[in-house]
Length: 171
Image 1 (cartoon, helix red, strand yellow):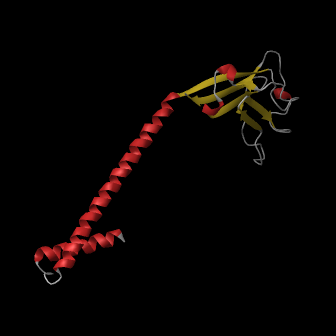
Image 2: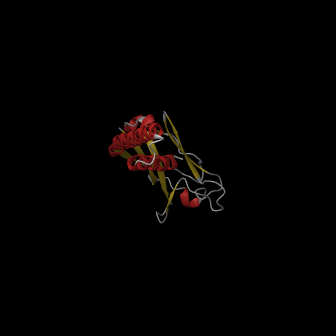
Image 3: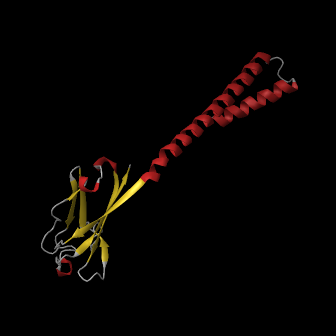
C-alpha cells in the first residue's frame, strides 16, 4: 500500500512538473506535500531502527563479561544414589543465582573411558537421563532410575572425580 501511494505521488509530481494538471493544481500540490511528509516519515523510521540496533549492540556488550566456574563432582555413587548430596552451594564459589545464564554437567564412568552430559536423551529418546536443578541456595544434580548412569559403571567413590559442573554467569 505504501509503495502504491509513493507511485501515485510520483505520478502527480511528474504531471505537475510537466504542467499536465494545471486544472488540478491544488490537488497536485497537496499530493506533493503528502509525498514529502511520507518520505520524512520513512526517514524517521530508518533513524529509529538504527537507534534500536545501536541499543541492541550496547546491550550485547554485557556478554563480554561472561564468566565460568568449573566445579568438581566428587564421590557420587550414581548406581546407588539418584541425586548428588549435598547440593553444590553457589555462595561458596561467589556466584549470584540471578546472574547464572547456563549450567552444564559432564559425567565420566569409573574407568574414565566415556564422558557424557548429565542432561542427555535416554537410549529410547523418551526422556532425559539426568537433570540439573538450580535454586537460589545451590545446584542439585539428579540421575534417572534405570537410565545410563544407574549401573555399576558409575559407582566408584574412592576419592573419585565423577565429573564437572560448569556454571556460566555474568557480572
